[in-house]
Length: 399
Image 1 (tube, rainbow, N blue to C red):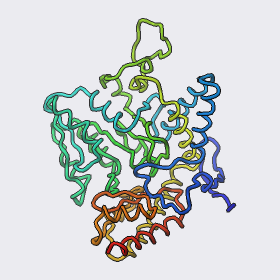
Image 2 (image 1 turned 180 degrees about the vertical axis):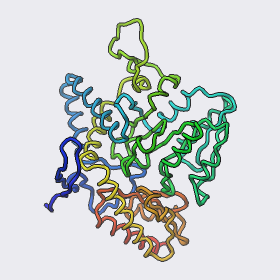
Image 3 (image 1 turned 90 degrees about the vertical axis):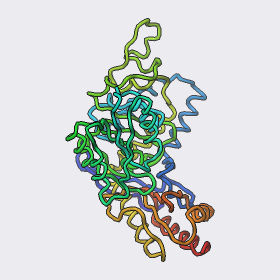
Image 4 (image 1 turned 45 degrees about the vertical axis):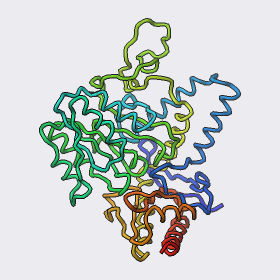
């Protein structure tokens, strides 16, 4: 076995630590597979797969005998999510089914007034447009801005803010082009104009750092199944504590009560924490899995993850530029991209090129009239080299 990855990190509790981790053991993917689709679904680390298998075995043989331990895993997950976004307390974290549920809780919970306005991005992922579009029945208008066509996307969004604007809804990274928004600039503008900021971070969390201390968003939503390498069906929502009681509750059940296990009580009140947004039985299988995946990110540290992923993106970019005819759509500025690299070619249509690449086991996506590549920090260099060779061959085959 090759030598394990050895690196130094700073741990706030233990100081400087030398960490050793053999990444191929955590990601034993088929060596003939070029998996470059983390912007869609991220493969689980080995520890996550083992955790799921252990949980299933435990459930099969002992049922819920160890439920108190399951609850501790749930608490651990909230703490990990708190640290991942630099929230102040685990009470700020609500577990959701996915990003869409979190955005819907926000859109359906705020006390909108007729004439209010939501500013967003034209061409944003549909789940970050639909929750705001349906507010028209309450007299609220959704104004999508053609910001990606501007030389200054953030400036275009800020320039669209009016005295009617109540909230800016944005994705941290555009799902198709890979453009990474300057969230601090947008947050500062929202504070100056006294409007709310909702950020969908599913295309950046687990790929690059996110810090509420630097970007004090009012709402943050994400699922775990992309860059966080966790199963589908579990995500989270952060709500600024001062706003928590202002969101009208639309879902009700035993789990969202302040005393959730007081089953025979005739009275109840919503939890003071963000758990008030969780109406029913938690997804314990998903919770165990996500907790395991996030343990890997904490062992490595997000600085390491972001740096390694940036190196992989730069390698792919350099390789693509060496293929005649290819136009890289994603910004060449490392500060304006995360883990997505999208390219176009004037020859074969994107749909045909995507089909050819998938046939040759380059797992990617057709987006923005091109091909979206999305490696991760662990993606081996030989996999990237093989992907570039197959892209070159696919273009030659189709032209």
